[in-house]
Image 1 (tube, rainbow, N blue to C red):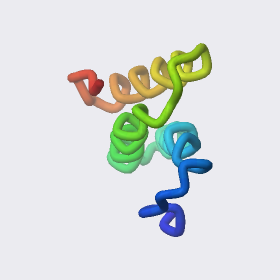
Image 2: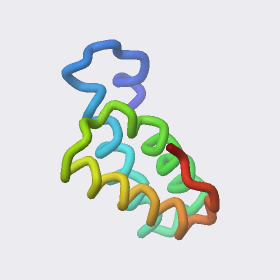
Image 3: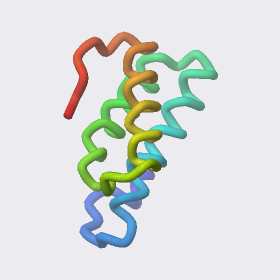
Amino acid sequence: MRSTRGTADERVTGFFTSLYLDYAHSLEQLGHIADARHCYELAARALTALPDDGYAALVRAGVAAGRARTGVDEPRT
């Protein structure tokens, strides 16, 4: 994931939210809550790259649920 940071290519920026969400969920399942919380935060920051459609709504719900499970109280918009 380090190699993807800092890219300005719009073809890939929309994938970051899903990538961070999936990675965060995996970390959470492994019991690495602090790392999972960090990745859920990265996913929340990347939400603006998603279009306003059903897939984005699903990802937003997943990010919100993950943040809630890992102790992040306030929603990020």
